[in-house]
Length: 192
Ligand SMILES: Cc1cc2nc3c(=O)[nH]c(=O)nc-3n(C[C@H](O)[C@H](O)[C@H](O)COP(=O)(O)O)c2cc1C
Image (tube, rainbow, N blue to C red):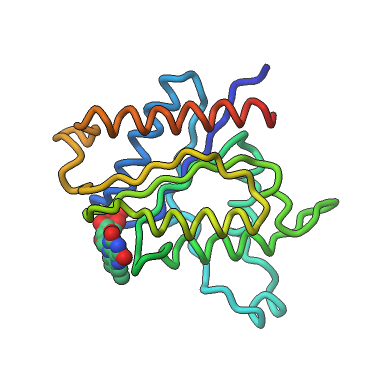
């Protein structure tokens, strides 16, 4: 069996982002479990806000095509999202919107979502830990007919969750992350 490849997409570009730190902690756990991990920054794939006229005129931007192919070349995907006004931030939604418009040769539009399992996590300084963003993201991915694994991680009080090395401090958070990682690995292996 080839090595399992996992793609991690943090949904924040902010310096010191709690979600980027959670993505890093997840990358460590996936590596510990023997997976090959790619952690992208969406800052390396800038996209305009989706506009049908723009797509009609210029097609789907190359960065969306590249991200779609990046997803296709992995066995499973973890999205780590902030919560903005009780939902997913525009960076995540806009990226997903563009990727659903990609149609590579011999494929249906948005086919990549149907072929890969996704796991979702969020970090927020609030008590709910981004739970509402996770509900929104699960709905969006499910509507794209993606398999979204049942476990999810909503990291509450994220400003207090990490030590000086940006590692998770609280044992329950570490265990929840490990359970999520384990589940995405299991489902990815089943879908390989
Ligand atoms: C426009 C905006 C809306 C926000 N809305 C929420 C919210 O609904 N729930 C929440 O828990 N945090 C909310 N926050 C706070 C973010 O969770 C916090 O800024 C978090 O640190 C962002 O993630 P990051 O650290 O990965 O950049 C909001 C922040 C911004 C900028």
